[in-house]
Image (cartoon, rainbow, N blue to C red; front, side):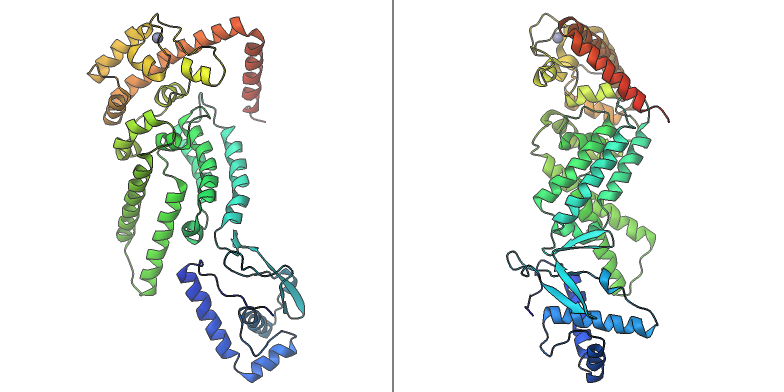
Length: 422
Ligand SMILES: [Zn+2]
């Protein structure tokens, strides 16, 4: 039988538990009587103590104890896994024999809803989980159109469902997350965050999660793991803690998560304008008690919407020049909010609400966070202006591409039909 060493990547607390169990078991197996009993039950025991021998010994002892209770173990359902370093895995066909049943040593094993793998990096777990998350996110997304109901709390409820699925067992796997695994988590979180903020699906993960106020799930997983270890250490020392101490620890970990999130967003890969505006007031943005993101407000904040630059980028317009004024300037969210002469009247109303002429995105975000009336004023401006821009864009499209307009109308009707109750 080949000897394999325990992988040093296995977390210390789990390693010590397994090691402790093995030591206790091997001591008990020094009893010749028990070894003889094990052999009578066709369990493979050798005098040389190796990792796989120990695994066999533990399994035999377990079987014997179960049998003493008058029960029988379903050996044909048993699984075995060997933790190892890179390129030191067991050769193909490795197995152990317990109770006369051959059990293959696999590279993965499903246990309590987690897919354990021999490298302890949980890539297989996340690769199996992500299609389920995507399926749940897609199913829930169909219930969350950008226009109309459900409201924000319902959207958050649906996002919480997918989040709970994603973070299940996170105290076990959070410390083993690799960059590819983080990317897998992000794809599901991005889909749900976009549904929460009623945004276009081209919005980046960083911008969508920030606008939704949802910290990256890999950071949340690490916070949950830290809380789990903290509770375990207190329990090991026999210390009890009142609920307020637990809540204080949770708050502390939440602050650490926000701090790390802000650090990450200091150098975003996309959505620079909105991230630069919201990041300095992130705590206030997340903790605000007012204001919901509407479809048209999100368009102005994210820059992904009915703007010449964006429509040109996705191939819906031939030019990015603004069609609503004579300035010949590029039609962007900033141009719409601050410059375009076509929206002078709603802009005057907005300035009256905000109490200042500076309509830069940072100033607007700051005002929205500080005041509900400012939030409503910005939302009202966006609703009024974007409705007009959308109507003009539809008109231009129907003149230029009548067939595309008809197809878009048909797709819109089909999407509406999908949402009808059965
Ligand atoms: Zn303009």
